[in-house]
Image (tube, rainbow, N blue to C red; front, side):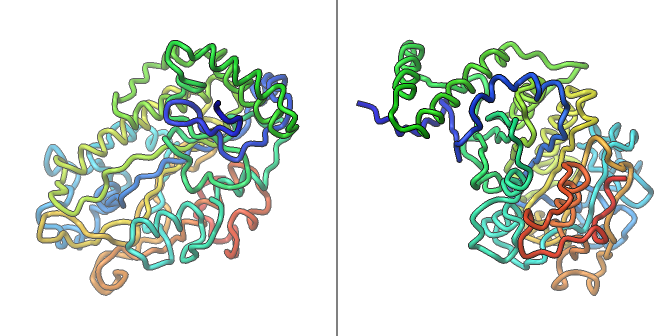
Length: 413
């Protein structure tokens, strides 16, 4: 006997914080017809070196501090930085993102990060995902609190989706959210018996004397049917978009599938690890460059594929902290503080690097070693929540923080 209280995962479906509004399926046309604002959050786990992603080639201390791993100045060598504004430049492996900068659809916030001093990956990721730096007891993530604050009676089960094996911290909480490892495997997986087992579960849920369990089960199976109708296995990217075959590239491809299937997607999440470059980080070639190839090409494919849907969509990148200014003895970088974020999409005042640049001279560094933080990451998140997603009062989303439009970077008109 298999209990009705089943949590299916690992190639099946993971439904966290269930409690969907009854009859969502009949309202799918409304979700498709009215283009809601959408956020796609991308987490670079492992603390990416923002100084070699968005290169301050106009700051001489960058080159003094990194004799073997600095990204060369623009036009100095083939793998030199791609100039953006005369002072900052893209890592050469982010060439695929330059057209969005030129079109003023991509903005950067540099020297951005947490006021908390931790250099622990685990703690810093937790603080960024809960948006409560220094507080370990926070029970839910900031994106889940956004979902709670902006109740939607017409929401489908696909309002908030992480393309991941488990729900990330920022989507955990009382609002409904899904973790899907493979969109086209969303459902009950039982080999050749899948259809039979699915029918048995659906019938069992349908006759349950437990009303809440009955509704939850019915909604779950309606969600399966909803996604099957969208036929994700037959998805073809548009506008010449070419996703990397990497897990990250395929995650963004699946987010595009959900966005274009009009299943009510409002918040999506994906992450990419491998940024902890303590040894042999490299410059225009090497370990960091390889990760940025995947990162930049995948995001470029997503933006191109979504086409005019990007008018209502923002892609937001983040990492728990940056790297130290000086390279270490292993030609890598150690854990640091300030970092760079990217914001791409509809309504973004792009083609600009936001945030006050503190400089890289030793006496301008945090603790004498790191890029100082001049923009609190919560001010970036809050501006996205208020000016893109449309929450007038963001205080419930960022507890314990005095949200103020005066501190917003100015990413949106």
